[in-house]
Amino acid sequence: MAILYAIGVGPGDPELLTRKAEKILRNVDVILAPVSNPADASVALTTIAELIDETRQEVVVHQFPMTSDRTALEAAWQKAAAMIAAHLEEGRSVAFITIGDPLFYSTFIYLMRILREQWPQIAIEIVPGISSINAAASLASISLVEAEEKMAVIPATAGIAKIAAALAQFETVVLLKVKPLFSDILELLKQTGRDKSTVFVERAGSARQLVLTDFKEIELHSPDYLSLLIIK
Ligand SMILES: C[S@@+](CC[C@H](N)C(=O)[O-])C[C@H]1O[C@@H](n2cnc3c(N)ncnc32)[C@H](O)[C@@H]1O
Image (cartoon, rainbow, N blue to C red; front, side, top):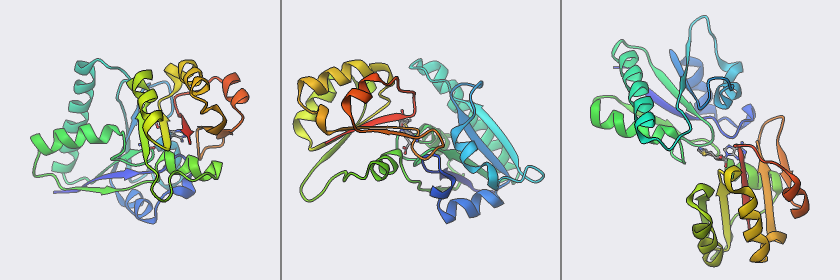
């Protein structure tokens, strides 16, 4: 049976793709790209666009809605898993592409679970990608952790209480998915005196990338979904 590849395409800069990812993406039969909103372009697909040969490769854009409705999510995962299995059973290799790394807060993790349970015969090869956190730290030229320091990574959707607890325990806190709670997070950072050691990074690796280190500028900015905060 053909192989399923999970490819981390990095944060959005085509030059931050690994050579292994490039080799597989040039050779695979089907490329499956996730989108949360069908009206938006897939960032992962845009990142690898120059490698695709549509005369020999099929590109499938599949919607995974951004919702906490478990039934809707499971339906989307199940549909994608069945589609992947059908291609593989017919001998076509598939690459599921994901921004950053496939095992780091990625839809691929849920898909992998379903595939392992329902199609255990499918061989899966995972190619790591540069995560948004590493890309953001490089752009801002700040260390994430050194020596005995500890780092917490929290999707901000976990809530302000969990963020406050992490700030009290870890030398570095990275917050993903900051958009919905942005003003509450900034308020907390001011209250805890971490405002002077906060970096905001949006769309790292893309033409629209933005790095802000001045807290006043961070406060004036309205973030989009692809943004994070590194708090030292
Ligand atoms: C579902 S997680 C995906 C993480 C991804 N798998 C990775 O390895 O970076 C989505 C969150 O990652 C962060 N993110 C992903 N790509 C980013 C980018 N290019 N610039 C800034 N933040 C990004 C944002 O916080 C976004 O809300």
